[in-house]
Image (cartoon, rainbow, N blue to C red; front, side, top):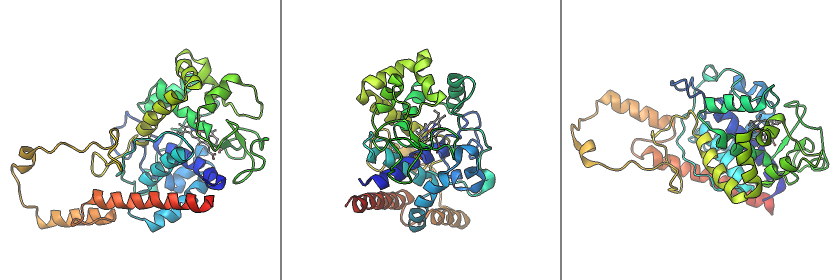
Amino acid sequence: MSPIISACFSPFSETGWHDAGTYNKDIKEWPQRGGANGSLRFEAELKHGANAGLINALKLLQPIKDKYSGVTYADLFQLASATAIEEAGGPKIPMKYGRVDVTGPEQCPEEGRLPDAGPPSPAQHLRDVFYRMGLNDKDIVALSGAHTLGRSRPERSGWGKPETKYTKDGPGAPGGQSWTVQWLKFDNSYFKDIKEKRDADLLVLPTDAALFEDPSFKVYAEKYAADQDAFFKDYAESHAKLSNQGAKFDPPEGFSLDGSPAGAAPEKFEAAKYSSNKRELSDSMKQKIRAEYEGFGGSPDKPLPTNYFLNIMVVIGVLAILSYLAGN
Ligand code: HEM
């Protein structure tokens, strides 16, 4: 893949995380509970301090959304994030789709749900934030490994150097400080580089350092530094979990694109459950269903999952063609 396109893809990974990472498992109602619901597209949320600079990633995704308007923002953010990881050489993530979007900025979560990079007690802070999402120590360490991609820019987050020997020539807009030497490649070098702490041009945030300081985090960090396959396996599981945080799916179980086991498992058909007490739908109910399907680009005559499935497959095709063209 072209390096320019790869450089665009690393903020996509951050976009999916910032949409999903606002989830609070103790709030039951959707969308108040936050999570992967497309709320990040609204200015009200984009202007949160943690989201500085993400408008650029959104601008790259908007033309795809305009062309395939049936695909929700919530799905598009997660699709772009998983595609970014996979295209950069990372593991295949068992994703499912069908996320419903929030409809207005008043449904955005309040500021402050995403983690700080330099809190007084980094390990405790990471647990406070990720446990609130229903995630565990393994998820925290594995997901932090996403910093194998991309750069930090002082003019956005306040963290990192304006440029280093690894970023001064780009690709993409030059500058910033990366966590790894090959910051367009998804591998386990993030864990190796933090462990060795030997290159002042590579970034180690206080929350990154905590992964080798906290005894429970350290078990996973050491394992991932030594064994890339173990990292990829855990990363794929944790990323799939993160991408579903707080999401409401339509259909409720979601659907997978490739029938992978961790994707949407189709509900087992039970004749008795569906055939008893069958009633004809009222006209007003039929109208309501039609309006709901049409709102998502489907129609009651063509079941939504199939239609939606095709839309997503086309979007993946568009991303793949873009990569191919840019690479030639
Ligand atoms: C563990 C807590 C985390 C903290 C404190 C944190 C903090 C940060 C900070 C400060 C930046 C630099 C932003 C900038 O200056 O533009 C950044 C970038 C990034 N983060 Fe995280 N992050 C965390 C977790 C994650 C997770 C879970 C993911 C993905 C699964 C992720 C993916 C990324 C990516 C890909 C970038 C680079 C974006 C680019 O190149 O533009 N981060 N993060």
